[in-house]
Image 1 (cartoon, rainbow, N blue to C red):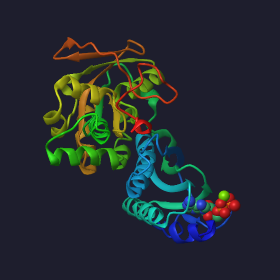
Image 2 (cartoon, rainbow, N blue to C red; image 1 turned 90 degrees about the horizontal axis):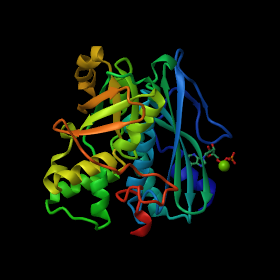
Image 3 (tube, protein in one colour; image 1 turned 180 degrees about the vertical axis):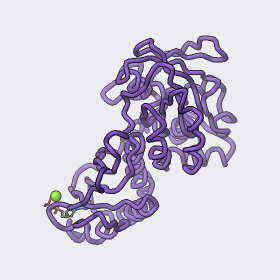
Length: 336
Ligand code: ADP
Ligand code: MG
C-alpha cells in the first residue's frame, strides 16, 4: 500500500466532521474557521515506541492515548478542543495495526466532536505526533502563572493509578484483585483527559496544569510561573480503592506524588471561588479534591501528613535525566 491510499483508507474519514473545517485532509493545508471572540490554543505531544509505550502495545490504546495527552493539555488551558493533526512515523505498512489504530482514533474523536484535519505520514521508527487545537477566550485561558498565596490547591480524580499500572505491566509488582488490576492498567492505557472539567473551571480557577509527570513535578511549574510556594496535605490526596487496597500507605503517596501519566488537572482557586468548585464540576462527571494551599515560600513544596512534616525527596519523570532523581515508575518501557 502506498502513502496516499494509506491516508485515504485509514485517515480521510476517520473522524467527526465539523462545520468550522472549511477544507480538511487532501490539500496542501487545512482551512479552518475560529469562532468570533475566541483565541486559538495549540499543543503538540509525541509518543515514541519504546519510550512512551511498549512496541507491542494495543494500537487502539496508542491512538487514544496520543489524542488524550493532547486533549489534557487543552483542558489544562480551559480550551474547548476542535481540531487535530496527526504525524505518523511507521516502520512498515501493517494493515491490522493501522485498522485498529484508526478505529481507536475514530472512537475518541467522535466522543469529543473533534476533527482530524491533516497530518504527515513517513517511514521510520514507530512514533505518533499529534497537534491539537481548541478555542478559549484569550482573557479566560487558565495559565500556570495565575496562582496567588492563599489559593486552595485542587486535583481532579485520583492520583498514581497509571504509575502503579505501569509497575504491574512491567512485572515490578503485582496486584491480586483482578478488578483492581484491570482498573489500574486501564488508567495507564486509556487516560481520561479532563476536557469538560477544564472548560468548566474557566471562571473559577486562577491557575491550572495537567499532571503528566507527577503531582510534585507539575505543581512546581505552577509555583515557578506564579512565584509562590505550596503546602500539601498527604492525608487529603485522592487515592483510588484499587491503590489503597493494593499497596502500603507510603507507596501510595509515592505513586500519587511522583509517578507519571495521571492526566488529571491540578488547579488553584481563591477563597471566594472555593464554594463554586463542586457546582461547576457537577456536570463534568469528575470530582475534585482540595489537597492544600498556595503560600509565599517561592518554589517550595511543604508536605504534611496529619499536620506533621512528611520527609520525601523524589520528583517526577524527566527526559534526558539519567540521574538518581528520575522517576523509576515511569517510561521504563525500553527496559521491558
Ligand atoms: P504534502 O506533500 O503537501 O506534505 P502529503 O502528501 O504529506 O502532503 O499529505 C496529503 C494530504 O494528506 C494532506 O492534506 C495531509 O494533511 C494529509 N495527511 C497526510 N498524512 C496524514 C495522516 N497521517 N493523518 C491525516 N492526514 C494526513
Ligand atoms: Mg507531507
